[in-house]
Amino acid sequence: MTQRRKLIAGNWKMNGLKAQLTEVSAIDALAAGRGDVDVALFVPATLIAAAAPLAPHMVIGGQDCHQAESGAYTGNVSAAMLVEAGARGTIVGHSERRAYQHESSADVAAKAAQAHKHGLQVVLCVGETLETREQGDDIAHAFVSDQLVASLPEGADPAWLVIAYEPVWAIGTGKVATPAQVAAMHKALRATLIKMLGEPAGNAMRILYGGSVSGDNAADLLHTDNVDGALVGGASLSAAKFAPIIAAA
Image (spheres, rainbow, N blue to C red):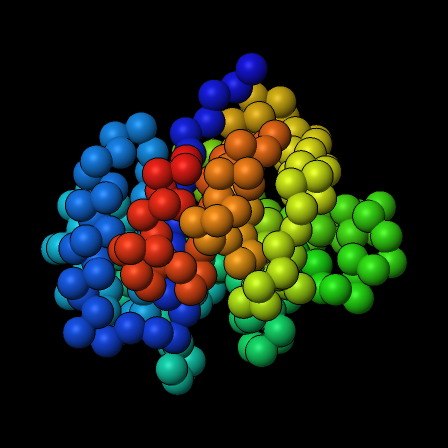
């Protein structure tokens, strides 16, 4: 059986000012106490440069990067800019960007490739809406698997790429997929990864679960088959709330 090291990642989304940097230091202290678990924190671009020196025991990353090296893309951030600011990773394909910025899976694949070109670790998100889920489990599994195939960059490798399954209907809603639902989706994604990348790489790729993860449900979710960690939203803003999730890994 392939042993995959757990990763607990926090996504601060559009939250956090310099006053919250004390939470970064506190979360890094938690990471330092768990040498057997990887911890990452994806903060707003405005905080990367200040947060990175406070986090020697975990990855500080951006929440998105543009697929172009540079250019006339007002308001966007390039992979090179993230690296220069001190980031060591980035999220791509989060459902909020797919929905609000109308990003396609081809865009996501290009972003992942560009991030990797600059040496960034990449968390690539996939997930289905409630409308798709209500069409049945088989439909949901096929939809998310197809989305994963279309979003995988050329040369995808578990050395730098992590997949995060986030059911859109469970993000920030308080609704959580059941362990059985998560296990079934992650099993489908694992099979897709093996088909696309071959057995060694497909088995080695980490698949995180995200969607209203909290200290109350983390243990059940993190000990579900094929769940290799969590991508955490609101609970990652506070070291006190993030601590039990890291502890459950």
